[in-house]
Amino acid sequence: RELKNIMERGVLIGKGPILEVEDLGIENNPAKTADTGFSPLTPGGIDLCSIEKTMERFYIKEALKMSGGNEIKAAKLLNLNHHTFRYRRKNLNISKIP
Image (cartoon, rainbow, N blue to C red):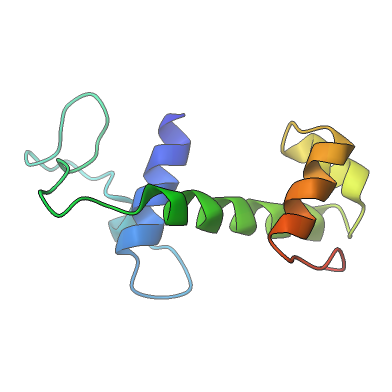
């Protein structure tokens, strides 16, 4: 869960297509909350649904790349059953060919 939160933060803050260490916000910074490593939520809030879809899309694509397009292997990498993986992939309009 912590890793997921760190990656979500990096996606929000990142300035380019590749996440940098600075984007992840894991360096020592007294402005961050002690238990999560994240900056406090601002009054403007965030779009959590958008963050979740971005993360899900990223990891589904990465799992497909690592598995050579094999959905069963990709699903195992994400600790999902094959049917759930296929449903999510199709729902996000992700091609099964990496």
